[in-house]
Amino acid sequence: MNDASRRSCAKIEQVLGQSPAFQKIDKNFYVVRQGSAYVYLLVSDWGADRSLVRFVAQLARGVEMNPDLALKLLRLNARLRFGAFGFVRDSSCVTFSHTLLGGDTLDEPEVLATLRDVALVSDEYDDQIVAEAGGQTMQQLLEESALASLKGELEHRGWGEA
Image (cartoon, rainbow, N blue to C red; front, side):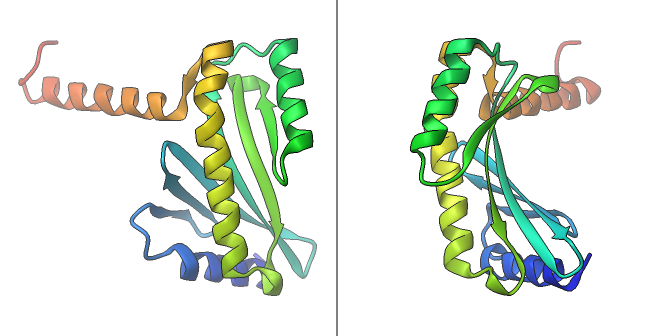
């Protein structure tokens, strides 16, 4: 990790570190829960002396991408002030992301505005995408996973049905 990436990580931790919604996953990877959205922040080197801070939210998985949805997302990309929708084919996942230049130019208002806007866009469109093209929102997937984990723990302790 270069100096610009280290400074970017320090800035992110300074700005978001006191929030109960903030979690440091690795030295350059963070997660913040905003409403129903989970926004991932990934800091990466860009050359020897610069860095990038990528904000990514997964809106829905198991989506059946079709031409109508793809065109709708592209039209939205053209209207949004920043950020873009994307599609990860392997997991049939619709994402929304935006990247900032890190290092000395990264400041608190920029981090907070980007986090807020990525979360707001994600929260606004996740249910619409699922209604139109199937799949599950990330909130639904996490709740389902938490319930399955709790059920497994209860069964392990003999408190539930197998």
